[in-house]
Image (cartoon, rainbow, N blue to C red):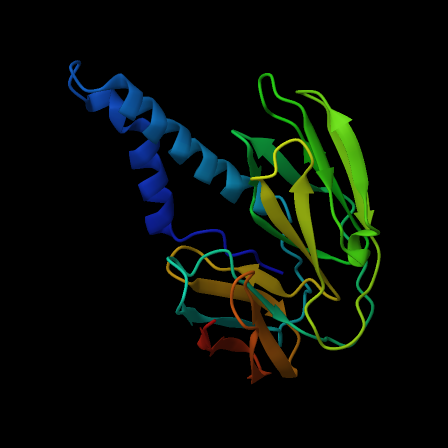
Length: 243
């Protein structure tokens, strides 16, 4: 499994946004500098948290990689799109380490978190002062309500429910205290998935050879899918999404 959390260009952008203030003129507006710094740090933290889902090495020399781009119309940027292999033969245990969903500056980080069914997710509250209350109205999340908890505290939930049918299994996350906050946990059958970067690019590594349905999901767009045959090496696939 590989989570595509940003190209090298994205990472260089983060570094420039976060640390360019050191070379700025002393007369530069400090409020704008602080806003840019926080924005860069928030994006860097999102990448780090999604990357906490460690890639799985199957050890199979015949395993391949699916790579490509998603072209999305109807949204400003083609990021935060979950691309996944819908069904892979076998049983897949969740990772031993919990996945992380932070709350900072009244934003869920990351905004979209794909996981294998059975994964424990830790919900951090990294606000300096504000309380949060994470809940989900969706059955796949067992209609969880983690209660209101203070800064620095952590709550956990295991996503062990399944969805029926071919639809993508999604749990919307909300905050009872701050209704403007939202995020999504996508619960999947296997670890062969990725999240697109800001250009829409993705990579899914260590996919067993075979023919599969490749699916793209975005909160505001129609689900897109295509058939892909994977062998050793890289299989290039592009998808299109729209409202």
